[in-house]
Amino acid sequence: MKTHSLLRGLGFYVPERVVTNAELERLVDTSDEWITTRTGIKERRIAAPGQATSDLSLEASKKALAGAGMTPDDLTHLFICTLTPDAYCPPSACILEEKLGIRGRAAMDLNAACSGFVYGLDMARAVVCQNPEARVLVCACDVLTSRTNWADRRTCVLFGDGAGAVIVTSDREPKRPGDALIRDVRLSSDGSLGHLLTVKGGGSGTPMGLGDAVGDDFFIQMSGQEVFKHAVRNMVAICEDVLAANGLTGPDIDYFIPHQANWRIMEAVAKKLGLPVDKVCATVERYGNTSASSVGIGLAESFETGKIKVGDKVLLSAFGGGFTWAAALLEF
Ligand code: UT7
Image (cartoon, rainbow, N blue to C red; front, top):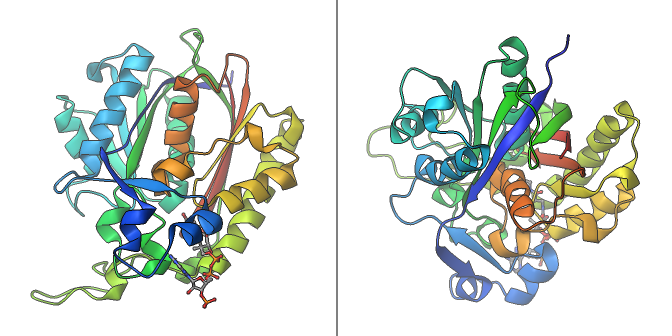
């Protein structure tokens, strides 16, 4: 018998500090008008000095555990999906485990760039299929402002920090109102296009020596227009894939939560899928592009604010560096 997986708790956290477009106008040669019309972003949240991925993850995870009616002791696995871990070593998932006051769990970080949340869901599904007793915390979190070049107007206006967390279990325990069945997930990637979106400096391919100055390549670099085109094309294709495999089309979907990089991308994907914009989750205006966490934040906030109801079919889709992209179909 096939084991199905459930999402049992949803939580998100964004830092307190709000940075508006007006504030960025004082930093680089940009304007609220340019940022708003080209991206849909009005403001973003920035982590406080010393506030790392494990700190944001802790807040989101506590909320997901509360939503699932669980305590940290109930967890068997902790995954943090991130491209901005606290450190290369130890993994942020181990730091989070310690902050949650538990030991002896399977804990690791996963990096699928901005597709991290949906990739993490599928990895958790695999664990649950193998071990139906597993209770897997999937927390997608990025503090991308730690790798933002505040002198580069092409990128510094885009990103914000945040975390989105869920608990994945098997469906052996009955589905409660608010739980979601993970009906299907699709993942994909294309490494030949990785050079279009990078954070290279300090990695083993671009090592740094003691006392070296940090260069441009230490920060996020992106060929925006190229990424835009691939994001639309691949998100549409993978959404169509997962819908067709489940006998559905776009109009069957009650709510769509795409990666929150740019409202124009989200609108174009929704249009091609035949989804009206009022079914599209949009946090991008308030949080900017929160990288791996954006779909998790959108999911948790949409549930909290009643935009997702029991019985709804929800489509998730992500796209990011690698390139990686993904789609998932949930049933609440
Ligand atoms: O999360 C991972 C996935 N990431 C994405 O999906 C991001 C995809 N890309 C995008 O969202 C868009 O390409 C951007 C928002 C990054 C850029 O928008 P665009 O409409 O593609 O602008 P562009 O890069 O073609 O730049 C147009 C003009 C340029 O000026 P010139 O050369 O035409 O004179 C830029 O120098 O806008 C200029 N520009 C800016 N002007 C004011 C670029 N950034 C800014 C800025 N303020 N912040």
